[in-house]
Amino acid sequence: MKALIRFFSLSLAAIAVAGTTALAKTPNDAMGTELWSEAMAARAVHADRVTNDRYMIVIDYRRHSSEKRFFLVDMETMTADGYLVSHGQGSDADHDGIADTFSNISGSKMSSLGTYVTAETYYGKHGLSLRLDGLDDANSLARDRAIVIHGADYVFPGGTKIGRSWGCPALEQAVAADLIPRIAEGTLIYTRGPELDGQLYAEIVNQAG
Image 1 (cartoon, rainbow, N blue to C red):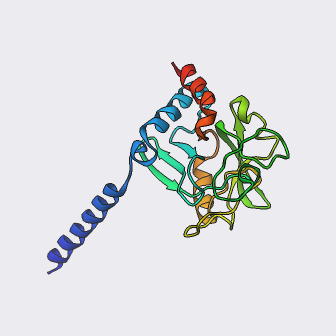
Image 2: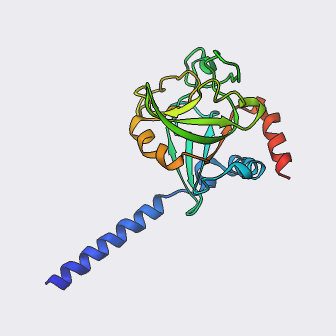
């Protein structure tokens, strides 16, 4: 009987693992081939800044705020998980859930596009937070503007849209608590905006060769 119980237990465990694997998405499936190709091109351009190469993050601000558009890619398993992420108030002045204006200017309360690398963690008014360094002209003032990853109560699933930040890519509280320690100190973040900003991305791809 014990042997039979052990057999069924192992079988159920195998099914569970298989189910988890089946649900895992590749980066191409999660975000699309074009966006993933751009992200990898940005990674090639800034390879010398990547010191935490286990993960990579891609944010697609072309998607509505109610959609999962913050993609955490495990570079070892090449699987991608999607999460909700905020954009800045100034990037969505009519609060319709679509970010359509971006800026690198202090006080704009807008999100900035381009490539970032994660830096050190700290505890601030939002709890555990993660500083970001902008690597492109479009986001070079990220540290000066205090554009950081943090948790926020206004980021939650199930609504028609989520709240807006002052330009930070804010996550659900539980997600931020889990992800920030894993992605700190040298993880690359590639941030994509509307097609009208296509020139920025064309330059990134060209730099990568």
